[in-house]
Length: 294
Image (cartoon, rainbow, N blue to C red; front, side, top):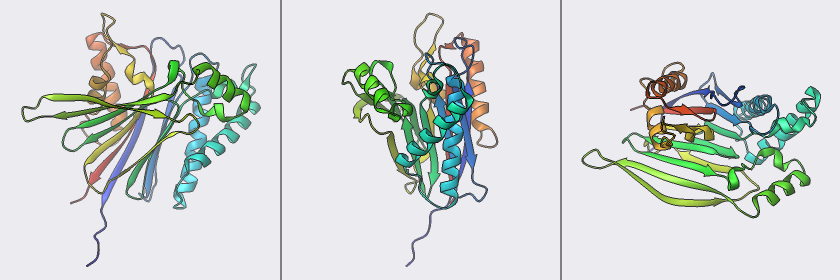
């Protein structure tokens, strides 16, 4: 007896929300859907606020990654994280030198890169730096993973450029590791939300965070990536707004047609303005939605 191949459709969208604290938004997000439906992808980049022209660098990195991944995936080839790393560094450094941005052109490339893509019945995540990634399930539950860098200093891709940059970063973090904090959210019989912070995992400093989620179980509804600005919302009394609150609100999509992430982000920002909430940092969001066929 033959094995029935699983059928599903995916939708992808992304959006960037600026903040009042940044005159120029230093986040960037981009997405792409294969016309033949074989894959889709999204990229979120967050430029370092203390480095010059990282709004430009974030865009350069995102577009280089997009081109590399579309070329690979269009040929049915899996995009290896180390090859993305090498190709992005080589091309982005070339472009920064050509543009001659500022006294130290490669300083504009101090940016995170979060990659989300669907390929061969799986959704994959690569994260260079920090940010959050979220899975929402058809039963109403969520898993939120947040990368917490040492001393709030993300391990940017550009630190792999040469020994001097790498050494300076390792000296700055003084042997500390980035960590992943995982939060599980589900509902019990009385519809009460239960939160469990039960796992903290160390991350190696010489490679990105890499996860693969098979879709065969038909449990996952959405997978999203966020820049770290998702955790920067504050109330009028200066109290932090829970990232759990933000994630749930941003996943309350009314539909998955068209610019569904853009619509939800704009709606969320309107709700925040009404309640007097504000974000101290720019934030970006990208989501892949999975619709399973019966």
